[in-house]
Structure formats: structure tokens, C-alpha cells
Length: 544
Image (cartoon, rainbow, N blue to C red):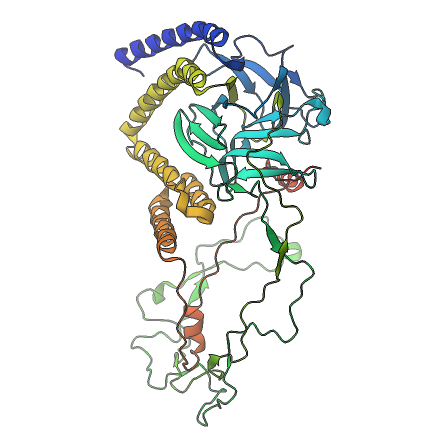
């Protein structure tokens, strides 16, 4: 239970929230807010629910848990949802600053599903509000997405290639991770006229990127000037082997490939006290044949076996056999040592040719935003969207964030701390573990981790489900970070020195064989997820 002081603080914060909500209309009327939806009133009649059959999830106008503030609620588990709000007029992104911002509260957590918004192109691009679905063309997709190895705050720009006319999805590289708690969080994307993009979570800058940088978006908005020639072929005599078996090497005369790896230990003696006449197992003397046992139908009844109690104090029971030992004459199969290949030409690559799809670009050719849509497939209910904003300056976004989100967040944070303190009274590890996981998720955001990020996130999620392995996961993550840092500082692996040695013995070779790396988990397709009962991670695609 909350103490009186905490109750008083909570009531005070609730009053401040109500006061803040009253100020929102003034902010909206007097600022550069292009669009603002607080969901104080019902969404029905303003937002249009998709009539497509697969989008059976029910949207509700609901209060946020513990607040008097309303939002748009995902009310059912394991459903597809689609809803759209058409703007009075399209928002142009080509001039000036544009800020996209909205709040999401994952009241029941998020194991597999999305909570992102799609900023849709005008309907002339080929979509309708009642027919809104996954194929409806958007300009920007922004917001949290989590499923399996995927844990990111998406920012995807759909940009038209002026040479081909094709719309291509350009994904922000190394985006922030999704907060792992059940509190309200506010996501902000600031699009600036100098081609800069800034992503904030809870008002804190988490990522800064440049739309025209190939290091920030995949694929890059500006295609490469040259590409590998698709018609170029590797010459038949091109030798890519850096080393080859020494053709002049011969197997030593005393090399016996047929010698066994192990032989009987002739020096071994039967331990004193070995009970050779006693079996290792005996019939259970306390077992009784069941009354309903029918020998004709069930067969002859046999008592179950138990360990022979006489063997417990003896070195062993049953027939004694001489143990095996390693054969000192064993050498295994002979292989010629490797030498540098005199015909080695390196790894072949096709020649580079001018890229027919290349174009120059001073700034992105953003498509206008004509509507805001939420189109998700999630396994969790309780996802609450609120305070959706499009603004022409950062100040407006900051004012609304401070007036609405910050007050709610403080109330939720105080409640969470009280619950953790209460839980810590019976189990002090709970609060500590949460702190550890929060730190681990922040470490996963380190930019130099690169391709290792997915493995780190997968390990963290596994540890959350199995707290007993947390320490092992921390050690693994430290090793990954240290390895990535070394690679960053020293430019990757050093070339191995050439050493001609006799081949390792079979057992030693097996022990020294490197363990296979875990393959990166692929995002599940919708069909696979439907068969397995899990919502898929979002797949990328290109739309003509």
C-alpha cells in the first residue's frame, strides 16, 4: 500500500495532469501545431476503422490505467488492427522543420507486436480509409516494434527513385531500443531542413542521423555511383585458394593410419572388493503385481528394477572389464601440410560499372502526409496511443510533451517505485534485476556494436525470461562489447600466421574445433506466424 505522503503526491500530480489537459487547447490554438489528437473525446466519427476482414481487432476509447486521461486502446490479444485519421490538408515536409510525436503505453508489456504510426501519402497514391491495410502507401513509418530479435524504434522513409520511379524503404540504421517497462513513453522524430533527423524518447535524444548519409540509412537514399557488373564472370583459371597441400610432402614411413585411438589398459587391475557376482540392478522386492494385471492380455508381469543396494558400498558390480586408455601410437589420418599457393590471385570480384539507377540529391524528396494510420499485428492487448502531434517547430512538441506526458510519467514512475520497494521487501533481487536490465538495454544502444546489436538484445530478452542466467548474460555482453571495440580500434582480425604442423589427433581436433555461431534469427513471415500462433516481425518490401 502507498503511504500517505505518496498518496498526496499522486493526487497532486493527477490535479496537475487535469490542469495540463485544459492548457492543451490553448497550446494547439496559439502554436505551430499542424495536427493534434488528444483523444479526450471518442475517436468514433473522426478516425476511420478499416473494414478489411483480417483487421478484426477492436479499438476502444479508454482511460490510461491509474489516470483520468483517455487514449486509443488496443483491446484484444493476437489480432490485427487498422485505423486511420485523414488530415484536413496534406502536410508538406520539403521546407522547414517538421516534428512527429506521439505517446504509447504498453500496459501489459510487448512481447511480439508493433506500436508504430504510418504517415500516409495522399489517396491518389492508391488507397482508401475504409480499405486501409498493410499495402497502403506511406511516406514515413515511425515508432516502437518488438518481436523475437527485433527490438527497435523504427524510422522508415519511403523515397521515390527519380530514375526508376520505384518507392524504396530506407531504414534508419542502429535505431533506439524500446523501453522494457509498462509506463507511458513519448516518441519524437524531428525532421530538419538541413537533412538532419533526430529521434527522441521521453524528450531525450537517442539518435541523430543525416538522410543523405549511407552510414545512417539502409539502403542509402543516394545509390552508389558504381555497381558490380552483373555480366562479368570469373575466369575458369582464377585460383582463390590462399594455401594448398604441399605436393612434395610425403607421409612418414612410421605413420600408421590404422592404429586405433584407444587400446586396453593392460596394467589395470580389478579394484579390491569388486562384486563380480552381484548384478548392478535387481528386482524391486517391495513391488507387487497389480490386482487388475491380466497375463493373457498384458503379458507376464515382471517386477521393476532398482539399483542393487550391495553395490553402493562396493567399487563396482557385475563383470569387470579392463578400461581403455589412449593409444600412444595413434596418429590418425595423415594430411600434407599447407603451403602458400603460388597461383593464388585473391578473391575474385566482378568489375565495377556505372550504376544506371544513380542520381544526385541535395535533400530528400519527401512525399506529403495526408493521413495518420495505425496498422499493426500484435500478440498483446493494453497498448494505448495518445497525444498524436504533427508540429512545425520543436518548441510546440516540447510544450505538449511537458504538459501531458511528463506529469503522467511521474505518477506512473512513483507507483512503479512503490511496487518495486514493496516487492523488494520479500525479494530484494527484483528491483536490482530491473536496474540491471535497464543498464543492459542502454548498452545495447551503443552505436559501435553494429551487427552485434541483435545478438545482445536476444540475450537480454532470454535473461529476462530466465533470471538465473543473468550473470552469464552480463559476461557474454561484456565479451561482445569488448570484441566490437577491439574491431573498431584495430580494424578487424589479424591475418593468421602460416604454420606447417603435423595434423592434430582426432580427439584434439574435435576439442579445438570452433563452436558454430548462432545464426541471426530471421524475422518471421506472416504465414509462418499464423501457423505457429505468433505475430510476425515486420517484413520490409518494395512497392512500385
